[in-house]
Image 1: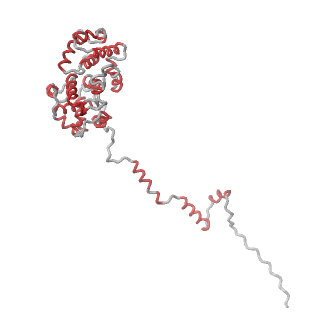
Image 2: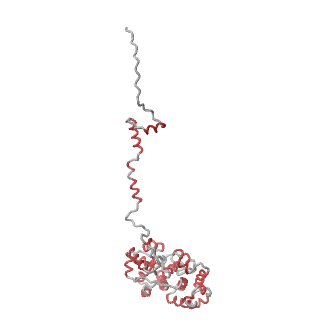
Length: 345
């Protein structure tokens, strides 16, 4: 046998000149900053990045949500569009009534055709707001003829219209007032108004300068002056442009006729129905009275012949006649007619 040959020493394997260190959190920064050429490392990294992204099916939902929240261009806003930008003045200011009629023609075609058939309104004036409020109280629940008679005697008792001031009204006793046809209840209303003037709660200058909401609050504090009386005073004596007497049966009936509604709208519905008339709802209301008169209201001839002059006696006579004829069918429990009618009880 031959002698075994000694084993040849194996030469050591050459070391990898670019060893890849094991991945750990401490080396992440150095790895991310270097350029890695190995596909075995790059492939999982690409896979990881792919897994992070959102599924493609969810991407189209974003624009749909945005479109859902966007207002439709064909949808009109329920709130007033242009009227809110108009600064309305007293209807007796030069050109204001013409501006009101032009505005109403534009926003309401149905009202436009009604405007064509009637002359423009005229508004009465009084020497003072106090005198206008006194007259409003005296005419409550009276026809025009009876109201005129009592008002004339009352003015004479005070020494003329210029004498109708709180200082002259307060001394008048209920007995004196009863002799000229003023009831005891109305006498208390007149005295309450005069006292609020004397105490400074109300004044002519304050009434003229108050905004509509504040004025309504202050005047309804007076005994005998309800919401209907305040609205009529604001329209006919102060010539406020944007007053909507929601409790007025004539206006509500007119709105029913104008828009061909199945029933007379409730006061709570009137704001929404007449919203487009802003800021000239006083004039729109005036045309509702004209519409009702044209359909056969007994007072139409008297009011129409005056050229559209809407004074308190004519309005109250029209309201009282309507109340007597239609109270059972048309009046709702919140109407001024059923909670004190022409004044608070």
